[in-house]
Structure formats: structure tokens, C-alpha cells
Length: 195
Image (cartoon, rainbow, N blue to C red; front, side, top):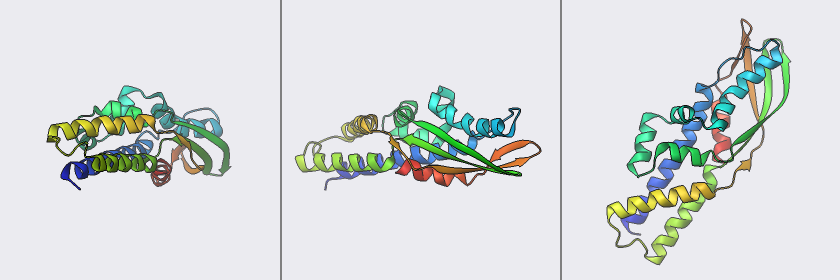
């Protein structure tokens, strides 16, 4: 295997990982407490607010989902970070299940529909294998390889189909009439995004 093929695979996989971790962390960062009049409305708002911010793909929200390091890594291979995260979030949606309140703790099942990194990794690996076997990139310069990685990565992410994931149980805790999302949610969101 030539170094260009290895570069394509390692860069593409690293970039896809960066997006998944950033989105999962974004859920916690945007998990603001609700302020509606009833407990149910406060809980719904606390959960919906970060999910709606992601779904709306507001530029400031998208920018906040990626760390400076992630933005730099994505930029280094020639992809605009906002274009990258926006493509990854195409088709992203969610649905809230019934709210179950038990004193100062509540749970809600959230079903997320999103692209998954597993399907993207598989497609990236297949593309790298095809390029290697065909010899298409054997004589590429470093700049040409970088350009192909950017182009192929975005094409594969754009082509990925969103998948409805199994429900995630979100736990909230009430402190002084304010419902806050349990930070353990990040692991469950990360698992949903991975596929």
C-alpha cells in the first residue's frame, strides 16, 4: 500500500472521529435549563433547546460544536469546518418520548435520526481501497492527495443516509425549580452517532 492511500484513510478516519466527539460534547455544552411554567415544559425545553440548536444548523451553533483543534485538523486537509459539520448533520432530527417525573428526577426517551460514523468509515475505507487497487492516486503529489481526501470525504458524508437510532434515555435532575440534563448523556449520544 502506498503512503497516499494510508494518508487518505488515516486523515479521513481522524476527521470523522473529530466530528462525532464534537457533536456529543455539544449536547452537554448546549444543555441549558428550561424555564417554562410546568415541570413538563421545563424538561422539554431543557432537552429540545440543544437539539434544536443543532438541527437548525445556525452558524454560531455549528462553530461551537467543533473545538479549535478539530477546526484546525479539518482545515488542514482542505475542508471548511462549517461545511464539514453541516454535511454531517444533514438529515439530523430527533423525537421526544413521554416524560416520566419522579420527584426531582425525570427521564425522557429521545430518538435521534442522524448519519453515523460507522457507515462513513466503511465508505471511506472502500474508497481508499478502490483508489489503491486502481492505482489512481499512485503518482499524486501531497497536495493532490490532500485535495482528493477533502473531495472524497465530503462526497461520502453528503451521500451518507441518516439512520433512526434506538432511543436514548435522558435523565434530568431538578434543583431549585431548574431541570438540568445529566452529563452522562454524552456517552449515549456518542454511541448513537457512531452507529
